[in-house]
Image 1 (cartoon, one colour):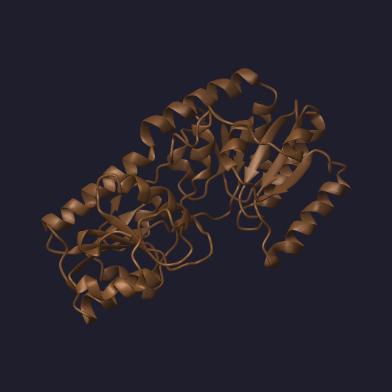
Image 2 (cartoon, rainbow, N blue to C red):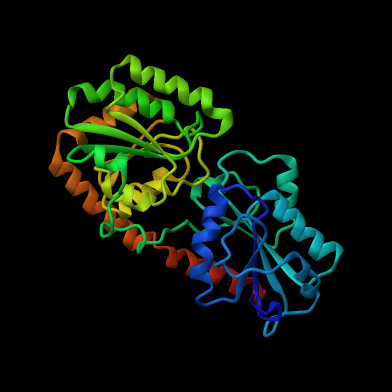
Length: 348
């Protein structure tokens, strides 16, 4: 447990269930902690992260050692609201920073909360375009040591059943927003012409999406592809599956940022993605992969098909993607850029 008097940055996480924001905090904070005294606050985070407890909050009235105030780095409305309350009502020495990944027009309530922030970060140029406040773009990065071409391959019954097969992969919760149905439609159209390929879908099915998943399984069965389009559920080590995939497809209809294309490219796997999230800013069109319109299964299939029959294209694209991620999207780069945002706040 860190000494609160030394903590300079607090990263609250007010959502217990795993989400993209939570995943960002879990991956990023250990890199930030190498150079900045930072702690998390809230549920749903591993004990290995530096954290403070709710009962430590009164200690925030005291200024931290060596700085005039702490930085409260919020990523959700509830966390912005808590920061405003601590700073403006309880008069704690805090500056408020908000990171926005949303790619939609904000509600009036969200705009009000953003107006109360001392600084704003957007995770992409597209996200910044929806903000009514000045913002700096700091794009997410990934752990290029965890996601790399070198490492273990997936083990277990599902992996063994796919031995010797080429695999098109798709990862994420099984739901309409994630475009799982678009992937299934594309695979139903393509796999009969490519007998050495199979499709693997990783990710959990929540209770409210069981009917959606069952409908996809019915369509797969009707196409006679039960043995070639496989749902393997939530997996323990997704990095191993990214290494195993020969092509990765990210088809969501809506996304905040979306890390999976970067994770695939870092694993030396070519990518085809919809124009959701920050994908068009992550993928160099025709070089590290392809980007197609959202919601268009025919366009998705057309972009996928050349990769299924051309090993040289896959290799060339995979090499370019690996270089792109290692050069521009390591997690340490994100941590360093956020550190410069913090320093600018302290200098102000």
